[in-house]
Length: 75
Image (tube, rainbow, N blue to C red; front, side):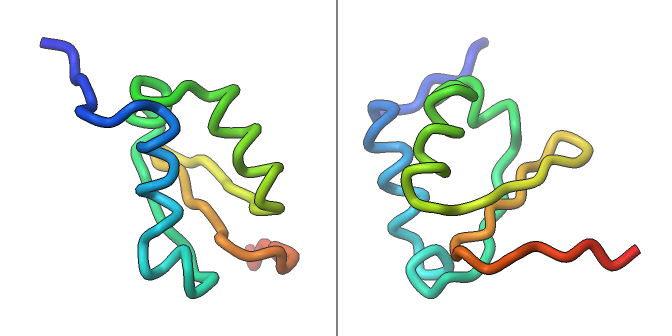
């Protein structure tokens, strides 16, 4: 059975970025498949750019940096 969000794509994005971590400029994590199902990759990337945020993807997880600081890979 396909997952269906009770929220519109815009409301889903608003909900993510209204979290305490996002408001505080921290990081949040979401499954890549949820982003693709509920809002779509293109719209998600558009919203990241609009907010000046960055994200990385690994093993089906998307880590969203809810700030405008540079990302430095350690290893």
